[in-house]
Amino acid sequence: MPLRAAEVQVGDSRELILVEDLTRTRIVQYAGASGDYNPLHTDEVFAKDVAGYPTVFAHGMLVMGMTGRILTDWTGDARLTSYAVRFVGQVWPGDTLTARATIDAVRDVNGERFVDLSVVTRNQRGDAVLTGTATARLD
Amino acid sequence: MAVEHFPIEEGHVLCFARAIGDPNPAYVDRDLAAKSEVGGIIAPPTFVQASAQFDPGYPLRPHDGQPWFGSGGTPTGVQSAIEGGNDTGTSGGSGLHAEQRYEYHRTLRVGDVLSAETKPGRTWQKQGRRAGALIFSEFVTEYRDAAGELVITATTVGVRTERVPERGGS
Image (cartoon, rainbow over the protein chains, first blue to last red):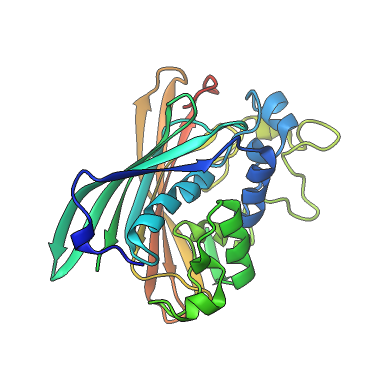
């Protein structure tokens, strides 16, 4: 159900656990779906021995994709007009990620109502791994 | 990147929704979708990233008859992979994805056929704490439907570092 303007207030927020104990298989699953098979994400030997990382890490776009769920669950299907993020920390196998979205503004544009949200996704240590903003059209 | 033919297919959307862990029936349930506002299965907000599957020269996918920079019998099949790099600025070698922005001009749905063209945008530099100079490059991709109408504008910001940062982020 699309979100109605009467149902939201600036400052409202909600939280969603996106993934618990992220697996390497899940990262490979995203590689297969997206087509990005970068060995930094899919190949432990390459990531460690060639690239010098402690292990493989998640695609930023996997984290953006997972985080999108809190926005579309809240504002409704097919309602986003923009979604923008910064990847501010790497996501590793074993991480548990929780997203928090907050209503920043509700505004009228040419007779239609829009809501601006901010979103931050944190790992189990409380470190932000993704920060972003989105706008959605309301009913 | 130039993609001439990116069909938005039901099975591909299903696999992508599974990969991002989103159980929303709007991405998989044909009967429910038929009764929705859009009238059919829609794609998740970041789905156009999967246009890489339809980019013939995409460098982050192994190609028949060409060496692959990931491991086989040795840790990498391409020695120059250690310096790394690819022309999308998103990843590979020492490059990482710094930012991603989407503007949705209309909702993407199963049955659409898109084409995509990527153009370079701005480039800038910052001094990083752990990784030396950070070089940011922007790439703007316009996804258009079969009628030529703009559906999604995607902006990717890639960052290259002088050296691999410590565990915990770039």
